[in-house]
Image (cartoon, rainbow over all chains, first blue to last red; front, side, top):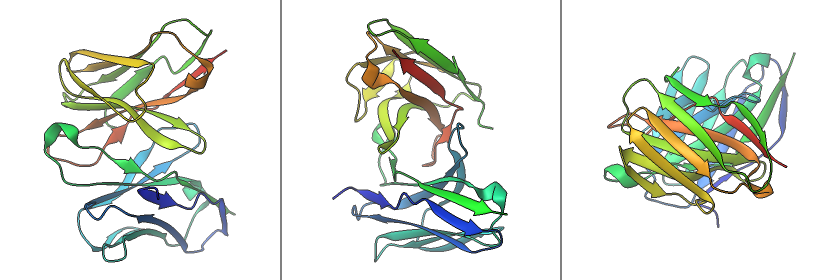
Amino acid sequence: QKEVEQDPGPLSVPEGAIVSLNCTYSNSAFQYFMWYRQYSRKGPELLMYTYSSGNKEDGRFTAQVDKSSKYISLFIRDSQPSDSATYLCAMSAPSGGSNYKLTFGKGTLLTVNP
Amino acid sequence: DAGITQSPRHKVTETGTPVTLRCHQTENHRYMYWYRQDPGHGLRLIHYSYGVKDTDKGEVSDGYSVSRSKTEDFLLTLESATSSQTSVYFCAIRPQSSYEQYFGPGTRLTVT
């Protein structure tokens, strides 16, 4: 079983739809969770991060973490064509200094159609 | 913008030739990372650095070496490029006391 599982999609939705993107993980030590957005032929861009269970909201984006189920989600409200990108989840366990690493999902390709 | 640049942005090289990719940062971060991104595999860590001259291997380090002689520069070298090293390479930095990483724009490498 991979440490982080993410449905690769592709996911296609109409403009204005609510989008739900999800990752599951197996390592119960993970405590730090991030979502990255990657446009075609660009570098990943940090979208949201959270260090705890529960919800975190930023504009049209909500990140949700359920540690008991080892499940994280990213919700996009009122989706726009400019949201079309690949979304990567990433997570990490606490560690001291040099040996910290992020574990990434493989990404979900989202297309929002006008 | 995390102040990260990568050079070159695109490169085509032949099998067996050495290749060096450069990552440059302007904000004096201690931690720097090299990843490769391939379809079906996602982002995979090649090497990372936790200070000048301090580096360690990631999960896919075979065939790659790194050097960091200055805080601002982290070099990735393919000593003898192979076709399996055709990929997009990303550099990332991590601010001290943070867990999130910030990525550069990437280098698209093709080995023919």
